[in-house]
Amino acid sequence: RLLLLDCVAQEFEPGRQYREAEVDEILKEVYDDHASLRRHLIDEGLMSRESGMYWRTGGTVDVSPGD
Image (tube, rainbow, N blue to C red; front, top):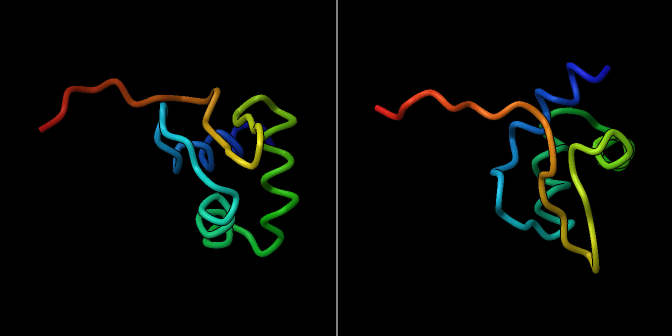
């Protein structure tokens, strides 16, 4: 489960904050029950939220040099 959630977390740009509606739009592309998926990301520490804003707080980050 954690490996799959890590793959989902990679859809979110580190350092950027997202409104809940933006998070839901991204997650709906992955899984119909986007609310549960959002909760799992938070529970596993891959995303955080405060005052209706969400941001990525964990997961794998690609550090290979850009083209």
